[in-house]
Image (cartoon, rainbow, N blue to C red; front, side, top):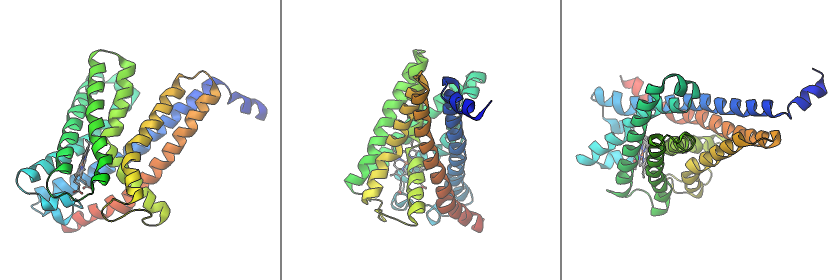
Length: 279
Ligand code: HEM
């Protein structure tokens, strides 16, 4: 193929669609690394410490844990421990090869994901709005909306699965995945922001600076918007539009890559190392 032929070939629909698929696969691969790193972090900070009789407060950054006891402490652990399962296995639901080849796994893993996501959202809302309020109301609204939207997305994902309306089920499942992982994305975006700015910029210790507030909404609204662009691009018959969707996906991939690298280097590795240091 000559150079000009190669170039004009890119304007055909098929290579455009292929690039869009590759962009989704690349995002999944990077996200999987970040999800498993988060799962390892939670496992080490909250499960390994507890199993070894260590004081979790020495390792966890969560102010809620320090101020809670009795039922609230139990609820805190009921909130964070399921996140290990969600982060280890949640992403498998989005991989078409797993969905198509292991249908029974997809069904069971999906049910567990939705139930644990529901529990995460309700216990999270409880933790956020009871006890010593450590965040301002404005700062709490981003995650509160996240929690409420999880409930809506869980409902519709399940509903359309039962009704066998697969396209709608798929669309809601992607949004449920993004929403349940809002807390994960928030850490990615926050650490990524710190990394590119070489420190905080519009952030405060209490996570209520203007950038913190922006990120508390962006951590789910931005990936949800990008997912919608992906679905739209997938339906298009014009290669230009499909390439447009791929470009948006590429921006999403870059943000996720920076976020995963920053969270692993700046947040999770130092805390995991601290636990390993005392074992
Ligand atoms: C299902 C989705 C969710 C998952 C997987 C999840 C996961 C977690 C994890 C792993 C932690 C420990 C944080 C750390 O060690 O860095 C945490 C803490 C917390 N989460 Fe969630 N969460 C979810 C949803 C929510 C929602 C919707 C809210 C509030 C509306 C919320 C409120 C909290 C609070 C208040 C803490 C304690 C934070 C602190 O004291 O610093 N979570 N969550």
